[in-house]
Length: 355
Image (tube, rainbow, N blue to C red; front, side):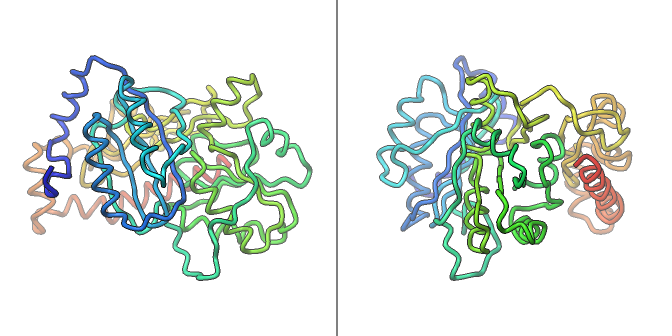
């Protein structure tokens, strides 16, 4: 395969239709590993060809520090997929987590990208050693640790993730990105360096780096939920444990979330009715992520505002011209400068209220 063909060139409509025509079942899963990769670009190209050949869809990030992947695998190709990973010493016997809730359309195409880091941390400290991580706890151990009088539970995800689901009494930082959470969590935990710190995230990758970061800053008893919320959900079901996580686990694919418990702890950002339905504004020039109940989705046509709904009604070519033509961009500037920041402020305020 020529190097310039190592990218998807089909449009979204084609990709969705191809999946609808599939006659087999897919398994959604995720995996990561912090491991030294000498030539990320070469590894990227090899993996793209190998995964594409067995019809794998999803998102894979490669960096000198390791790999991070969320993918969808045809059930009949599962063994071949595992064997291909095992053929690379860097990924031999890598721990693969199955999704809590399956969906044939969690992803519609394959993306394999080279990144500077598999999780951007924003750190510039040559003395920081990300390999010196905290203790790994099973679901049962995490539940027991939460009962200790000196335990502090910390959510290492973004505000829009914890808004729809989190552990009981967890500290949920009001941040947009992981790199913002590290200094904020350190500040929020000031004076608790001797307490039992319990970190969790979606699949464990952010906690692994966060636990090393806190240990680097002299926190003595740092622990992380092994396998994150995904593995926790599997273990509480298999071992018949009480779930101390309430609500949904936000995921970065077409599913948007996985139900861990039936609790709805968030509200529609437009009418304030209980809802945990995340969506992106249908106006592609806006595309802000927010919570919208079914009623508001119908009333405002899956948009965050009436202004965006008007733009979304236009033919796609008209929308593209509007985005490209400065003299006709007034409606776009309106939501970019007024509506979008206002909605984001509303989202963050409600997230704080629900903590």
